[in-house]
Image (cartoon, rainbow, N blue to C red; front, side, top):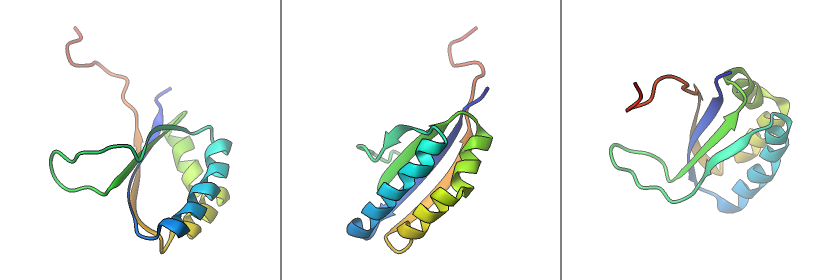
Length: 103
């Protein structure tokens, strides 16, 4: 089964208010067995534009990733984030095909 991922690019505008979102989103992430791949670590934009904070979250598949986003638990967290961060969030399907250098 191909994994599903959230890729979130975030500019936090209200750090204190953003903390409530971070606490609330954990209920949805636990429910859907989410796993952080990256969570706001050091970034360096090599080409183009991006936001300051990049978060990648892994789910068992694409459908689970979408279900988590649309869940009541995450929608509640999202309501807490509004006004405290600007974000672009997308769901992407993982890749299990041939890799560079593989025959």
